[in-house]
Length: 209
Image 1 (tube, rainbow, N blue to C red):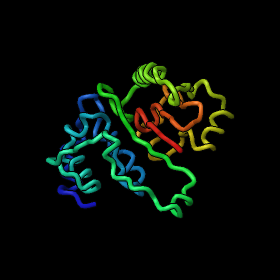
Image 2: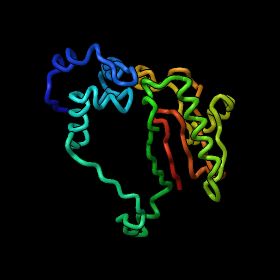
Image 3: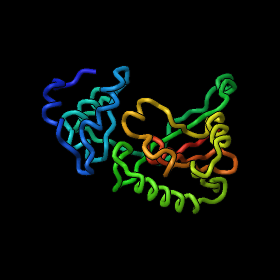
Image 4: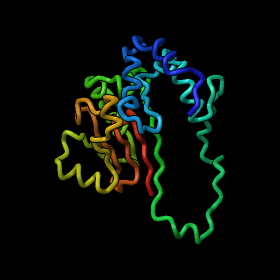
């Protein structure tokens, strides 16, 4: 990854700074500093981190995603316009399962390195209220990690439905604080639609078939 600044320059500029949510630059980079085998090694502490520490994050995003600071992101949520021609039958026959997953974070809250236990619980309350409105094949149940037994958690993890504690990169970045408070999983009856709450992103929305 080639950046347009030296490590010393960016360190001197940001080492004592915090973003608008009070998350320090040191918190944003500690995971990569402690785990030098990281692929990227940094976690924004809030949405504002990208502005407050822009010299750093702009270059990381440009180098990794090839998306420069002046580039514009466009979204098209119209499923009818997807370019998805049918697969040949022999290729279809090789597919055992498919998973589509998106990560989302709520406006007004810090990201995982900077969020508090109280804020996680607020997010859970809002997400549960939203999930309770789902109908039809999306209708299901929310399970707080605190309410699941160890055996239930282990079974959901073994079935690849649930996230778990212990990732060293997330641990150093502070994402495992207050575990397992304020975390949970919603899934429908068939376990084909799932929402992880407060893992790495505040929401991981998953469709499985």
